[in-house]
Image (cartoon, rainbow, N blue to C red; front, side, top):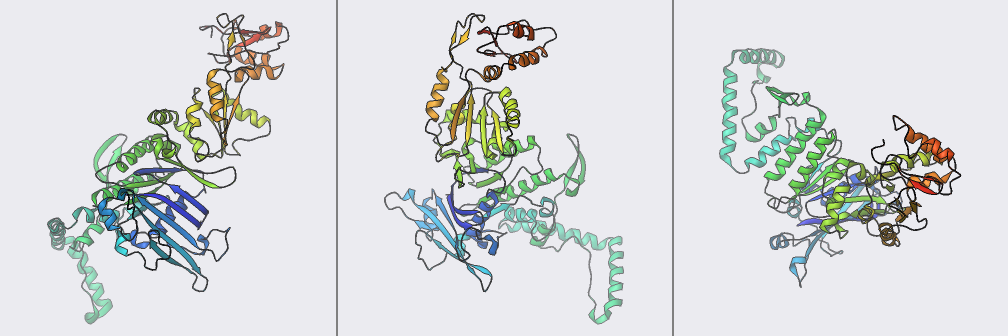
Amino acid sequence: MYLQRIAIKHFRNFVDFAIELSEGLNVIVGENNIGKTNLMDAIRAALGPASSNEPIWLDEDDLNRSVAPDSTMRVDLTFAKLSKDERADFIDLLNYNTVNPEQSTASLHCEWTWDPNGKRWHARRWGGERPEAETGIPEDVLHNLPVTMLVALRDALAALQPGRQSRIGKLLRVLAGGDEAKKKSLEKIIGDANRELHANTLVKDAQDEIQNVLEKASGPTLKQKAHIQASTPEFDRIINSLRLVINRQQGSEQIDALEELWCNGLGYNNLLYIATVFSELQAVKPPALPILLVEEPEAHLHPQLQTRLADYLNRSASDDEQPLQTIVTTHSPTIAAHVPVSTLNVLHWDSKGKLCSARVGAFGLDDNDQINLRRLLDVTKASMLFAKGIIVVEGISEALLLPVLARRAGISLEDLAISVVPLWGVEFGTIAKLFGQDKIAIPTSLVSDADPPIENKNDWNLAKPKIGESCERLKKLVAACAKNPVLKVCPSTVTLEYDLGIADSANPAIMAAVWEECFVGEPKSLNVALVENSRPLREGPARMAGHVLGRYGQEGKICSSPRGEA
C-alpha cells in the first residue's frame, strides 16, 4: 500500500493542484516558494493529529488568497496497491473494485470550513468516494497511517537531547516493545547506580546541604526530602533521560574519548538525527503504511555526504521487507543527480502560470532511457530542474559564451533564472524526453550544431560545408520536437564557432588573435596574418572541430588545425 495521489484545493499557494507519487522514494524538486513545504503540510493536515506526534494547526492565513474568504480548503489522499488484509483494515476508506479487487483503492478526504466567529477551521474527514458521508474516520484507522516529519529548519541538537520528546527515548521504546525483561534490565542498572550514588560521600554531603536549607526555608512541617540520583528507575523516565554522545574525532581518526553533541558540527548532528529517526521507523512493525516526510536532507552537508545520504534514502525506501514511503523535498542538484531519475518529481510553473508537477517515472521511459538520463543528469545538469527556463547546449564553449552574449544584448540569464546546461555531447534526444505536455513544462531551447555534410571532407584545404543542410541527427531532433509546446530546437548554420565567424567581418581576426594566445609560437593553420592576407571571406571562419578554436575559412575554403600543433 502506498500514497498514490494528492489533490489540493485552496490551501496556501495551491488553487487546484494534484501530484502523483510512486512507491518507495519520491524526490520533489523545484524553485523556492513553489509549494514543496506546503505539500508536506497538506498531507499532515489531512491525516490529522491522530497520525502524527507533531501535528500541524491551521489558521486563517492558510486559505489561498486568490479565492473568496468563505471558500473551503480541501485535501484528497488516494492510496493504491492494497493487500487483502489492508482492504479489510481500511474498509472505512475503501473504494472496492468488484471486478478486480487487487485494483481497489482507498481514499481519505478532509475539508475545512472557516468559522469567522470562533476564528478557527472546522475539519470534516470522510473515507471512500462517499462525499455525503456523515460518519468520520475512526482514530484507529488514522493511527495506521503514521506520518513522521523532518522539517527543514530542524534543531537536530535539541531533538536528540534528553526530555519527553527525546528521539533516543522513542527509539529505545520501539526497540523494547513488550519485552519486560529488557525493561527490567535497564531499570536494574539505574536502580543499582542510584544506590551507589546514595552511598557516595560527595553526593551525600551535597544532598545533606540541600536538605538543611530546605528545612530552614520551609520548616519541619512543610519540608520535602530531596535526593540526588541518575534517574527515577522507571523505564520511560530512564530512556527519556539518556543522551547521545560521540567519539572525539581528529581528521579521519576516531579517538577513544567521548564528547557531547554540541561539540559536533551541524551537518553531522543532522545526520545523527536522521539516523535515529530511520532506526525508529525500521524497528517498529507498522500496522499499515508509515510515511516519512523529509525537508532538505542536504542541510549543512558537503556534497560527498549528500551523495551518500541520497544513496541511503533510495536503499531504505526500496526495502521490500519494511515498506517505507519516503517523500523528500530538496534544493540540492547533488541529491537530484544521485537518485534514480524515476524517483524525481518536478514542481514548476508552466507558460500559463499554472503550477504543475511532473513525475519522471510516469514518462514511459524504458531502462535504456533511464540509464542515459542518469548518466546525463550530473550535478551541473540537474540544476535545470530548479530553473524557470533552460538552454541546453553541446559543450563548454556555448555554456561560457551564451550568458556573455545575452548580457551584451541587455539580457541577464541569471536574473531570469535561466540555466545554461552543457551536455558535453549531442544527446539532445534523450534530454528532450523529459519535456512536453504532461511532462516538465519549463520552456527549453536546444542549441545544437547543424553539422552539415562537408564537400571534399578528406582534404581540409578544399573542404566546404553545405550551407542550408544539416546532419541526420539534427533532422531527427527537429522532427521529434516539432509539436512539442515547450521545446524549441535552435540549430546553427554549421557550428557555433562558424556562425560567430561569419556574424561580423571583424570577428575572424579577433578569434584568430585569441587562438594565437593559446600557443607558445605562431599556429600555422590559423593566425592573424592568414586572416588579414586572405581576401574578404564570404563564409568567414569555417568549421572548428577538435580544437580549442577549431577551423576557419580562408577564401571560402575550410582550414583546420592538424593535431599536435598546439
